[in-house]
Length: 107
Image 1 (cartoon, rainbow, N blue to C red):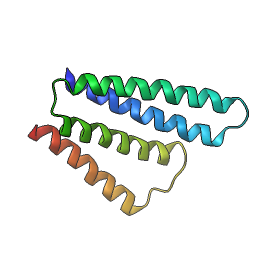
Image 2: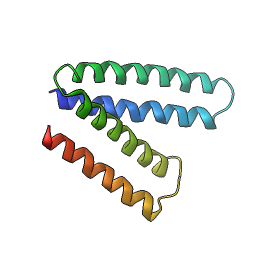
Image 3: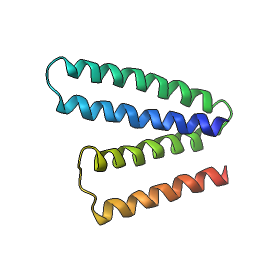
């Protein structure tokens, strides 16, 4: 159950990064809605991370949480914000995913 909570926390990390990206491209009062979404998703992510680390090793949990956030944010950048998907970006993204999976299995 704690691994599921940790994955959900990582997805909320992706959500708060997405909110920051959207806040950068909108104008007017919409920017405040995106910053509000950032604060809400940040809070949820941190609370879930705290919950998961009550049972999981902190080093592994934090590395997996940041890895999920990093991978998800890169994918959001590529698919939603149209950032480049170069060979090296994809290669290192695969390396990061492999490391996250490896940490889960050795913990």
